[in-house]
Length: 167
Image 1 (cartoon, rainbow, N blue to C red):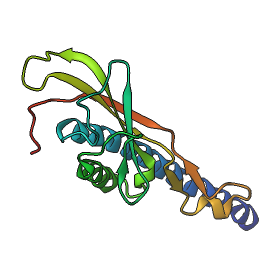
Image 2 (image 1 turned 30 degrees about the vertical axis):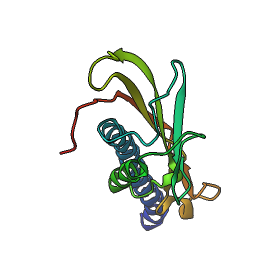
Image 3 (image 1 turned 180 degrees about the horizontal axis):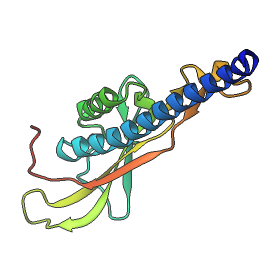
Image 4 (image 1 turned 180 degrees about the vertical axis):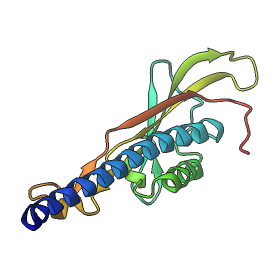
């Protein structure tokens, strides 16, 4: 009886840790999706990072950051604080999110009226990619298991609201 108990306890411990790691990965997956939605909502109501006044139809502007300042694919950056606010909001939900994991993409929606305030409203898309989830214990217990799992890419697209305010 004692021998079989000694053989089963390590197996039960590994299964228990695997269940906890799965729950942790699931939580980070959920938080990454919610962070992407939160970032898109914020990017839709704050001033655009890039100058969109001359954005042609069927074109887009991708804004990224490499730690120092936002860059918008050769376009003019007019509100770098918007990128910083989106990053701060998203990393508050999932601290593993860094500026190199986020892209903010503006494109024409062809919705709206050029003769009214707000004009043609652009679409804003926030992409999240390359976020790692580090295993807490499982990688040490299972030989050959990588120390981290890269979460899938997340993306949310919203129509910007010309007259909205941040609350």
